[in-house]
Image (cartoon, rainbow, N blue to C red; front, side):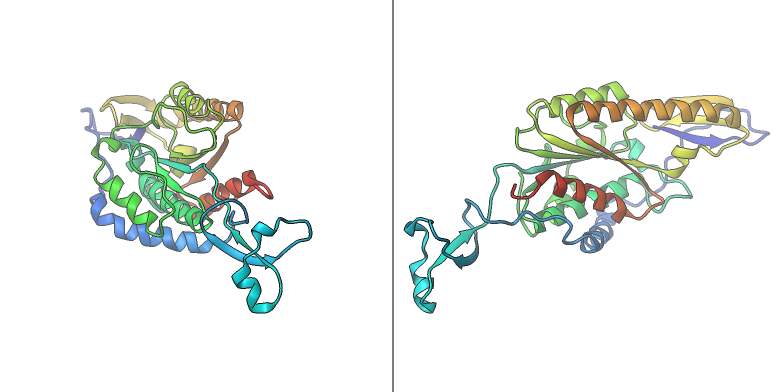
Length: 304
């Protein structure tokens, strides 16, 4: 991740990287969880797959249909009304939905145009999706951190696991392992690791036939590069810096490279049947959450 600093005309010495000041994650988590719940409530009902089928959880009683086996009749319920009823159970698929939320150094960036840092927006989106999906009957887990759970405390479970995962702040790519065949993945990242590396991870994760969705988090300044004058770029993860001269002239080349980088990620997703959604941090978090939840609901299809 490269951060821009515009230099004053009298400045001659190389400047040291200055990270965006932010509170400790533990202090921010309560606010992020509350915001995630607000976002989840705003998209409630878009996703749901509770339907009849094999499983352990009672769903509903319904009248017996002609031709159904007598073994399906719930005789106790039928005796109450003098009609034959079948006890239906929820459909419980063997798959789960796996989140991976990028918390590497580049995700800490927030410009003056953004509503939140990229990492805060990623956590809000991940928590909101987890709650929405669990409410819809799914099991959700975080790759490498938790089991897939259908718990009403899924947000707290994910938050606690992330809080104690110090190594997660160093990884800018999801785990390099195939997902179970019936699984879905939601990768939330700024996508600023090398495109070829991210493409390789996506291919590996999808190699079993698993479906997936990439939610690309971007700061508006990263998109537009609205700088002029002498400037210096800082790599927040490797500690490198680069003076680019006139930022206005260099900006067009930057935007072209960013477009090519995004195209490579988009192509990696297309090859394995995954989706790519771009979400900017100057937009409401609900937009990205609604988009991913809708894509997952659509991928289920009727009766699945």
